[in-house]
Amino acid sequence: MPSGETETPTRTLFVHLGFHKTGTTSIQVFVRRNTKLLARQGVLVPSAGTVFGVSGHHNIAWQLCGDSRYRADLAGLDELEAELSSSTLPTAVITSEDFTNLAAHPEARERLEGAAARAGYAVRYIVFHRSARDYVPSLYLVIRKLGYTSGYLPYLLQIRRTHRFRSRNGHVFYFNVEDFAEAFAGAALEIVSYDAVKSDVIGRFLQSIGAQTLGQRVRDKTDYTYNRTPAIRLALYRLVGQLALAGAEI
Figure 1 (cartoon, helix red, strand yellow):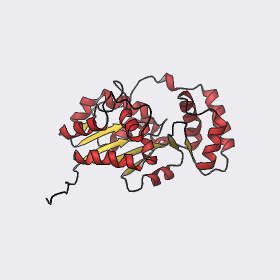
Figure 2 (cartoon, rainbow, N blue to C red):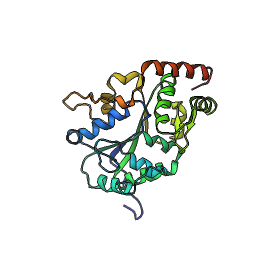
Figure 3 (tube, rainbow, N blue to C red):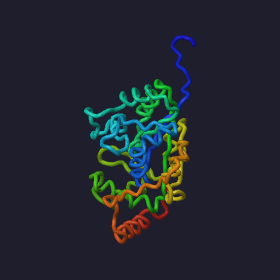
Figure 4 (cartoon, helix red, strand yellow):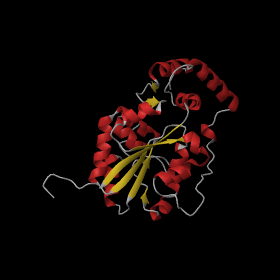
C-alpha cells in the first residue's frame, strides 16, 4: 500500500442517534445489560463513553459537540478508539440520543468517523423518528425537566418557524426527519419509523445491527416511570401543540 494511504475499513460501527422518546433508553439499557450475549453475535458494546452502568455512550456525544455535561474524568473518544482497535469483533454499537447533535456539528462527525476508521471501522448511523403530533409534546415534557426551555408556547413558536428547536445549551432537536437526513448528507444513515415498530423497538434495532438471532426474548421489562407523564396532561399538551402547529409542514 502506498505511503500515507489507509486501508478501507472492513468492520462496522453502528451509531444509534435517537431521537429522544423513541425507545432510546430501552435500547441503551438492553445493550448494556446484554454485552456478553451480543458479543457472541459478533457485536461489541464498548464501555467507553458510558456515564453509569447501563447508560448510553453520552460522554462521547458530549465531548464531540462541546456539551457542558462532558466529563473529562470519564472515558471518551480516545478510549473508544482504543477499545475498538483492540476488539476482534466485526461489529460495534454505541448509542446516545445526544448524538443527534452531530447534525449541527459536521466537524464532530468527522472526528468520530476518523477515530472509527483508524480502528478499522466504517460508521453507519441509525435514527428512529416518530410523528410530530406525538413527538412535539413528549419531547417538551422531557427537555423542560432538563431546564432546556422556559415555556411551551415559545417552544412551539420556534418549531413552527424553523421546524426544529434550539435549546438554551445549543442542542438542536429536529422534527422533520428529511431535514435531519439532509444535515447528514453523505453519511450511511438508516431511518426507522418508531411508530411502525414501537411494539418491538429493541427487536427492530437488533435487526439493524445484524443481531436479531439472540436466542432469547429481547423486550426489556424495565419500568421507566420516571419518564412518564399522566395521560390527561399529555393529551392537553398534544391538543395545544396541534393547534399551534396547524398548517406547519413538520
